[in-house]
Amino acid sequence: MIRSELVQSLLEDHRTLSPREVETIVSTFFDTITMRLAEGGRVEIRGFGAFSTRPREARVGRNPRTGETVDVSAKRVPYFKPGKEMRARLNV
Image (cartoon, rainbow, N blue to C red; front, side, top):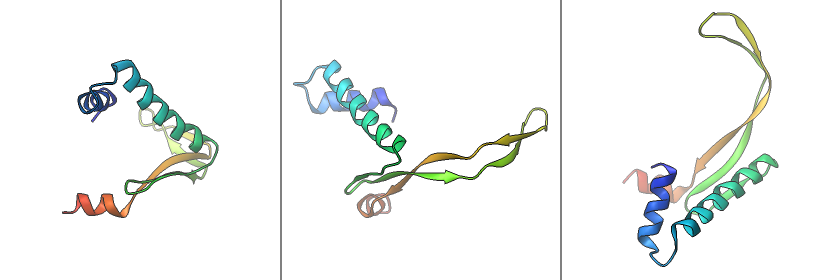
């Protein structure tokens, strides 16, 4: 499902809301999660899962076109761990 499909699905379920209101809600939801992760925090949605970040060490990579070695700096990457209820629903 892509973002526009999510907005459309929410519009079908909540006909009293305008498309602009639903888009604002979806944007606010994702922006809030992103801001919290950027601060180094964690976001947990009970029954769904938890979003956090994990560190990646600096390493030496390769440019796939040229084969040339490239230094890749250390960074944090997003990580999602599904909750128990989601895992149970997926493995019915």
